[in-house]
Length: 217
Image (cartoon, rainbow, N blue to C red; front, side, top):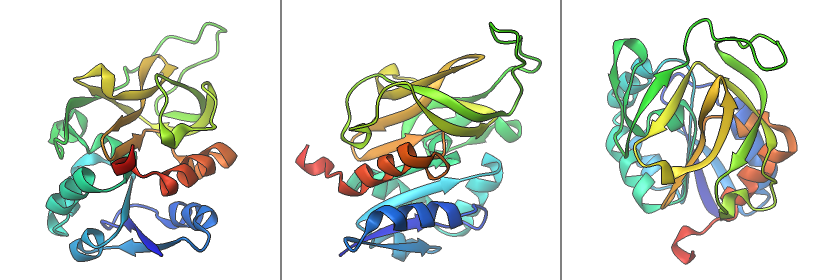
């Protein structure tokens, strides 16, 4: 039985993520909540959920001694970042007056503009972007197998990722402007949306992740 570590850095609400993973894990995977570097380092797969602000997230990662192990795991085993867990992977975020992130992928995190114009149908577009929205895949990937492009997933965010290399984008969503909703490279897949809150499609994504073997790809 393989181990799936869900990183707990002291801020995330992990209950829904753990429950969703346990729903699709069956008897093949053991899901554990990991607060320390050793537990994360010994896991076969890693899930990094995040919520709140990036400044507090990065401070807690440093305080918990998790920065180096996250970087190492993202290079060596299947790794899933969710929401702030995606934003933390790039170089720098505009949030909290400017915050250096993990710098696994060159890029930045920007805030949606204040007072955006209404949508084409006249409906208001508010910040944070909250609710269900379509994700268009840019290419095939084992973790998105069986999930159609334009499937709706659940979002809650005010900031979005701009990778320096557009080829990193696995899926994008149009809200105020097109933005990266999913990123994939090597052992990493990360989403701005919350698969654990995205009903059947989100569970399918997590199920695919648990079966994904990037070393065999």
